[in-house]
Image 1 (cartoon, one colour):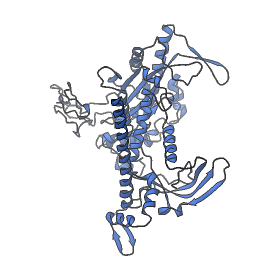
Image 2 (image 1 turned 30 degrees about the horizontal axis):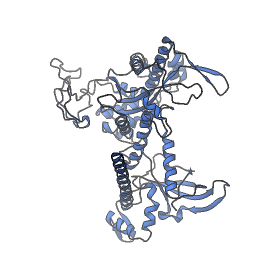
Image 3 (image 1 turned 45 degrees about the vertical axis):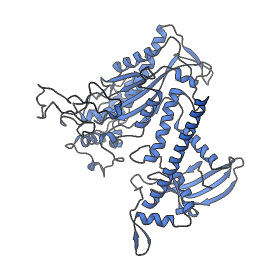
Image 4 (image 1 turned 180 degrees about the vertical axis):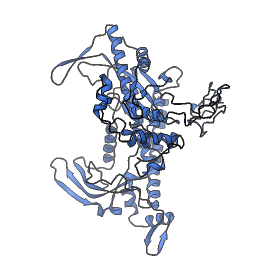
Length: 543
């Protein structure tokens, strides 16, 4: 029986800079004989234990960099806690236990990202239509799909189509307008043309690049990326306050909720639940795609998802969004390079759209698929991909006189340097909500930690607690299904005391075999689902 880990203890972890990918193009099977990938495949497939090895690697099948663990695996009685059996990984194929890396980035591991994207779709879609523990009534709650963009930090090359004639915007082949057609623009202070008459194609490498690198505000942009999460938090609070004010104006009373201590807390009768995805634009500035859903408050069950009061409509939610975008800004703490701090505000392009309208352009499924797609991406759109940067590797990417990305990374590293800034430097002038920023020991230190993300340190998919199901629930459900599929006894728990041994397949041949088997299983399941759906359609058509 293939072991399923329910509890996993890792007594030791690899150092951050330890090489984790173990994949060799050549493997020596016996002295004097060096073979390549094809020979590795034949050697593995010819062993008597090949079928058992395939089954053993199935939990990590398809993963580009599986994690290898060593240690002891024990079967424990759930009721008594008695150890029924014990097995060391030395007795398993390859003397190790394989588990998928679970990386959400499609560029790092396509298979694990495919699983994550499916979970992200469920998280977003369940908040729109219900299911998996979310009541179907949420499908009748007012919902808006808003896009919050970053402001301009300098002119960049862009592609603008004034009038679309294509049927599919994802494969748009419409003729764009000139990039920046300015007949009297002249040149910038650094002698660069301030106009561009090119009609850029979709894959033009100049898209997102500044017209003048020296005029562009690279420092301001990385600071904006770093503090954009705080800007969103305050914007969400402003939306809630605006709706609460509308309720007071229309005479909709507050709702009393009994707390755990027995006291009554009066709260507004409406709240906004959101699901948010961050997308890195080509110019390397983050913008947010957000689903905002209006919910009511049930005094008897504060966690219940109920419709908003009748006096609050989707028009009020839209007004609240636009009002918050106009009003909310963040002034960052003082920095030695800029004592007055930077102003963090939203850009002029704030798009608010309604879902499931008559034109059918935006539906629940389309929006959920759109957001799930961006949940598996990071900085790929900018052309930059790297792991966390260190003093030993920063010189490979940062250059104050380099291209756009090199200057952004250099700005992160320079602004995030130790400056001796402490709580006293900003606390003297701190007040109100701004004080939470100014009292940090060094509000810019995270720029170095997130230099490989161009300053953005937030998660690419976040949601309100009440919006939908959680990733943890989806993973637990999948694990329960797999245990039932494998006929694992329900009264037994598999406990592992394991340590990290490395990452990656032992050989390229092993990677080819395991990933091919996983792809075949996935294809078989997809075909099976299509057949079941077709049969259900036939039954419905016949009825």
